Image (cartoon, rainbow, N blue to C red; front, top):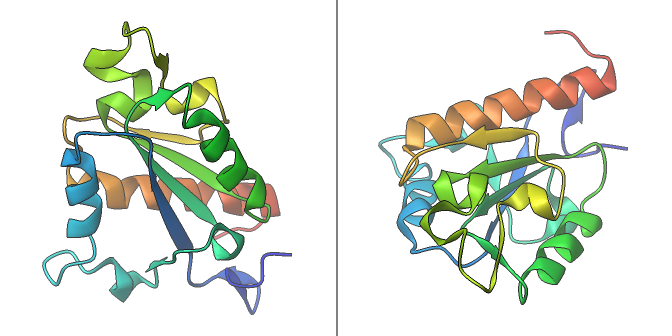
Amino acid sequence: MLGNMINQGRIKSPWVVHFDCGSCNGCDIEVLACLTPLYDIERFGIINVGNPKHADVLLVTGTVNHRNKHVLKNIYDQMPGPKAVIAIGACGCTGGVFREAYNVVGGVDKVIPVDVYVPGCPARPEAIIDGVVAALEKVKGLLGMTA
């Protein structure tokens, strides 16, 4: 059951959790910018939480490497379904400039399924917010909901 997202038959307030797989922190800063008064994603009901057991959407930044791929998979497995995953930035989407490094697995989709890709280096806050909205549309589709 999707207790924190479903309120009277519609998605009301999606909760997101952010995991940094080892980025340069450029995308992380942009994710945090979404919480500032300039963008204020909370006005749309999007809440940043620290526990994956309470999250509906997983935001992932940075390249996945052999040391953190198990942690990423564990966080994903702790999230209740239906859930959505957003790969943020060039590194999260493909491994970025580090994709040929010996310790890099690649993008997030090499370890867990990704629903939305938000490209950029770094990704812009507007694009991240659009990615969350797109992910919620996919979750609505899984639930068989409209509007």
